[in-house]
Length: 205
Image 1 (cartoon, rainbow, N blue to C red):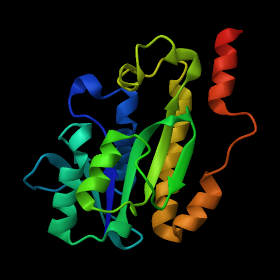
Image 2 (cartoon, rainbow, N blue to C red; image 1 turned 120 degrees about the horizontal axis):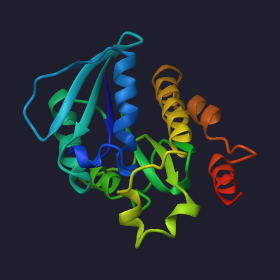
Image 3 (cartoon, helix red, strand yellow; image 1 turned 180 degrees about the horizontal axis):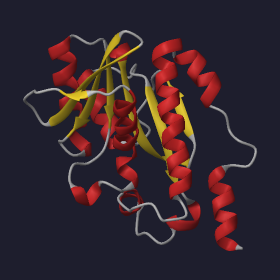
Image 4 (cartoon, helix red, strand yellow; image 1 turned 45 degrees about the vertical axis):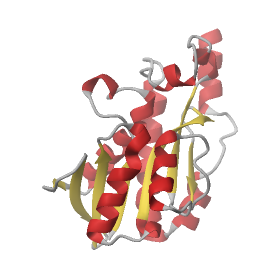
């Protein structure tokens, strides 16, 4: 059994923000496998599906980002899921817009949602898919990083975001089917013409 966790904030006002990109990838994944809602009690939404003859649970913590670990721990304990069978999918301010990075573990890198998960689960060895949301050309408009990550993507960013979500979807499926090493080799590549750099040049032209 696997547990796929999207990180984000509950509420309609947060749906299109950069901080909820993890939710959007899980939305795409659960549609692919026709996952159905699973009735359960807790501060989360849970869906149940199958991929490659394996049961997959899709988890949306509803505790707000900084307490995401509570929901992850509840479900991992309830269904006896090992940490190496958990994949956390989340936005990353430290990566340029449109890029994704797969890692088998490591620190939270300043992400409060992942930090909560690692703290509650008492391990850094949880696989994750990081989604690049940083756009240097836009960042100067905001007071700080918190305001930026809670902003919505702009119209000309959305095509890049859509592609990134699809790539993260494909990468996650590969992680489950073929293993994390193959997924890392396939998706942890820096394009010669980085998408965010290209976007910023277009803004300046």
